[in-house]
Image (cartoon, rainbow, N blue to C red; front, side, top):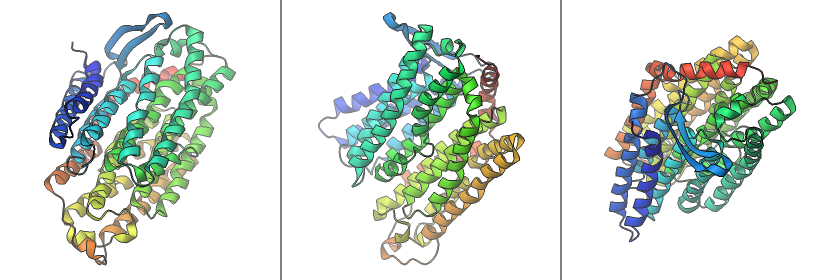
Length: 490
């Protein structure tokens, strides 16, 4: 069998380096084509992961293991299960989308822009497939560099501030994770995650490790109150940066909870579940209200992302198959819906160079095709049945009600708040009279924009109408994870 996981990592990285090396002379058209071919190839090599994946087992599949640093027993150890395989596919698909989305929009340093996304795609796939703790940490940290450059070079007026804030938050959070990794290595003399899952740990040690991992992954999700870097990063990032940040980078944080925290420190996870549920509900409800009052479209969508990711952490700490599967489906759905919402904002910004909601109004009169897509994605963001936004939220709410009626009630508030900020955004931007003459002159979607939004709309519908293939892939792995988490290490 071909090393599909290595290909998913190194094909986009090599393609990104090729864009830089071959087009240092600033030949933008060639850079775009090489980047598009590289992104398409990177997505193509991940398709066998779906086609050949066996959902009947929770064992690692497509395993690759080679010596890396023998002195520390660190291995180049890759593998996927039903929890991680879908996110590699999502990441590779969204990389193709952002390269295509920046085709006519990015005009300065095109080769560097495209290369940053390709390299970051490979690094993110490495984080999703790494089964060695040190290897995961290398990929986890390395992905910060391309995103830092994307925000800092191609961002808005306050891009340097936003890039540094993003970098410092995520770097400082992960330093304690490094301490936790070193402790686990000393306890097991191995960096293999499977060895860490089996090592007996006392409750004080588990609590300490939980806090260390939590600080790293909660910043990445991001959870309240360490969420403040995200709105700034989204506002200043270019459209492609916002798409990858919301659709993929946040998912690394959620993935860390199920790959590290729950299986390594199960007793601490149960002991601190109440705290995690409370923080998740604060994110869902409080940040939902914050989203309503935003005047900037990107900030509104950024805060809605924080609220929706609160559903993810809530589902994980309900310790039920419904909750965890609902959280994972919510992560996939949010990847499609948030990406589409940011692309919609990008379409408007490319025409009028403003993200202020007050500058618009009556867009449906001049851009009816665009308006149809934006209404659809806003409905999905609200959790409309038949769209992907409904499936994950429904499963998590159902699991929450089974656990505690009040927790379920609190979680269900997001259905009201989500509709409030999404539909009010639509009302103010799309409907009403055309008061701004610049809005009256805006052209509707071009062919590239239509196909970009159309592909994402099909993905949102597919996951919303027929979620079973996705849930079946993850079900056995989730069941096995919960069985492991139920066993005490004390």
